[in-house]
Length: 171
Image 1 (cartoon, rainbow, N blue to C red):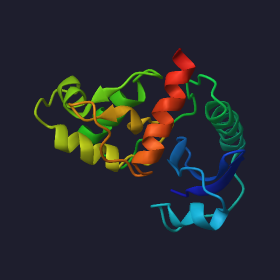
Image 2 (image 1 turned 180 degrees about the vertical axis):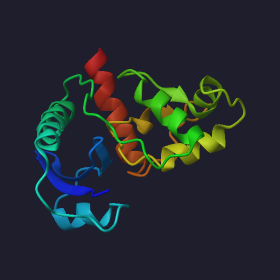
Image 3 (image 1 turned 120 degrees about the vertical axis):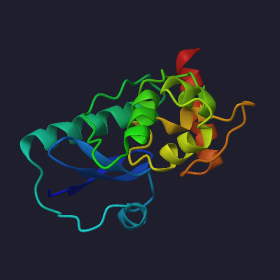
């Protein structure tokens, strides 16, 4: 299966996005340059060939939605996600996380219980760490049982910033 790299430019910076025939496979956070964004990809062997017409539509939709998101507007991301490669547990945890509404949070233990594995909070942390599509699958909305911000690939400052941005949208 060929995965294709496409760049997303928004006011906040440049994001690298990887597309498959199923949809969005991977997404970085915004960075100041393409080079910096590319260094944060986990996918290798990428093809920088033209996107299919469907992928071009998804890319435009995601670009528009990310621009709105970072400008403070409420957004329900609607691009298809390529969920291949996740274990059954991680898939359930990430799909549950994708449904957490803007402005709300869930705990690692709460996600574990919701997907039928009470007591598997650490495993949920592993699933969040493996999330290839942050922001679209909002792993930043998963927090510690005591309300603390823990573990986030973009750093805790960005996690706090994203949660603050979303809180303003719901007020």
